[in-house]
Image 1 (cartoon, helix red, strand yellow):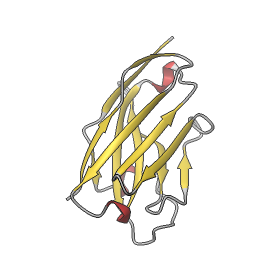
Image 2 (cartoon, helix red, strand yellow):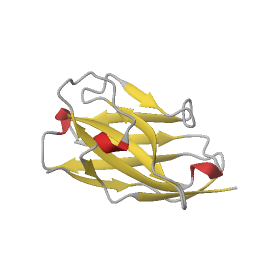
Image 3 (cartoon, helix red, strand yellow):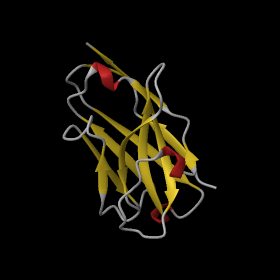
Image 4 (cartoon, one colour):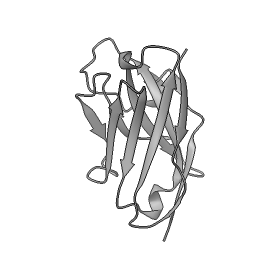
Length: 128
């Protein structure tokens, strides 16, 4: 079992920045690819950003590319999502997810069904 706890979500004005954190516990963090998904009201959950188990490979959705950066600190069992130039359409609950990876440098998946463990989510609201 892997337990994931997100933090850092809050209300921010358009154009502002936020950094989300996801603290993991329970298993060897460096064995898991990690990702951030988000879900806005009335919409399906969508992939935002992902990072390989080793941290050497990242993937971003087109909608956040150039604005969001994902990183991880395996010594602290934590993955981060730095969000810059926020837009009202970034408003959503952001979820952290973990995928057991057998190839540490492989690119993370953007498909939610691949991920085995999920956090409870943290609300990000961007006002215009």
